[in-house]
Length: 151
Image 1 (cartoon, one colour):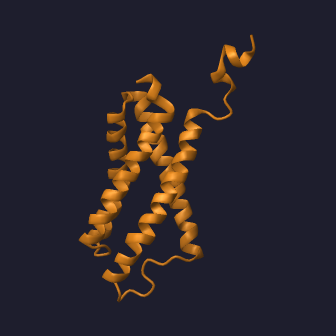
Image 2 (cartoon, one colour; image 1 turned 180 degrees about the vertical axis):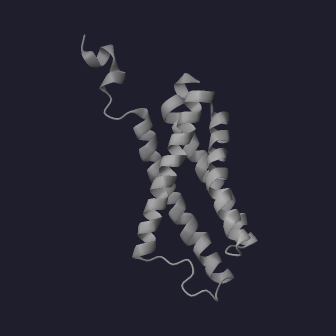
Image 3 (cartoon, one colour; image 1 turned 60 degrees about the vertical axis):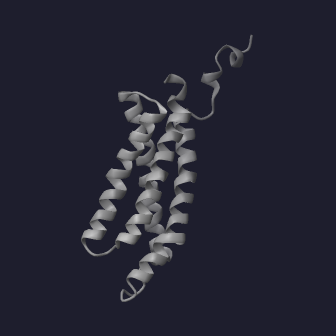
């Protein structure tokens, strides 16, 4: 009998966590780009026409956005994975863990921007629900690839 037949899990090239990280990298970046260009950028430009070059997209902004998305992908993957390891894994719990990441990142960000008059209620009404969906899907990706069979 071959080694692959005896224990196929030991012969994987990527761990389930690595696969979840890669899938979330693709998912979150696509979601962030869509939300920004389709909703946030036009809404911010409409709400703040007096601010020169509000919501820009140029090389420095793109580079900072790359750092933001890297931190976001790591956070949206690592925190639900750790919570599933400690508190248990299920699809419902993944929704809770994704919601926790969303509150920790996006709700604080957008409430802070709103509090400083740098965002409108309309932007929050679009950006927050879309970001919630993004984080819940990211947590479900983690559950799917790392913990689904253990639940």
